[in-house]
Amino acid sequence: MPNQHNLEQVKILQDKFAQAQSAVVVEYQGTTVNDQVELRSALTEAGGEMYVTKNTLIDLAVGKGKVTDSLTGMNAVVFSFEDPVAALKALFKFHKDTDKLVIKQGVMGDKVLSIEEVESLSKLPGKQELMTTLVIRLKGPAYGLVNVLKAGPRDLVYALRALQKQLETA
Image (cartoon, rainbow, N blue to C red; front, side):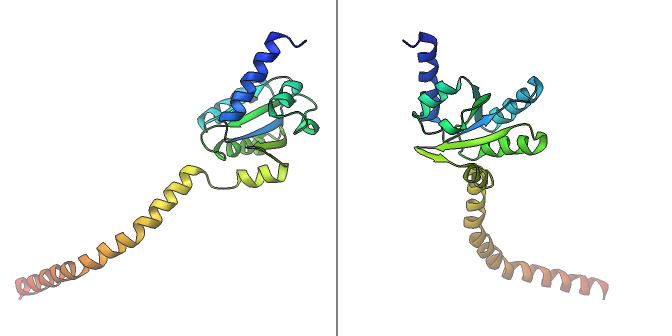
């Protein structure tokens, strides 16, 4: 009979998986407390969270057998809530800087992602970057049209100033 604490942990994990845009199983063995604090703050800043619990509870929360192969050693789940890519970028930046984490598998919706898929996801531009690019692309033609429409009067003003300077010097 499972104890109440474990049932609550599974419920919390299931809620987090339901809310998350993406999640990644990582092995954090070999990291210091300072490393974990640094990683957690970077993830929080990116709209994510690192959650440490038992491997069997992670397996039950994801769905029995989906990520069982990855659940050996000391594991945690990194959730990305606001943007599916933002927390992954922070995770891979930390991994690249410290080389202390082992990134195992990811989950996005009902799909289990391999390490390669998680890495390629982390290289995609984030939601904010895509929105900025879209605004710039939409604004570009209008900006060009305004410049073309202003060109005639602006050139006339320049010509009149040049004529005025020419008359003043003469």
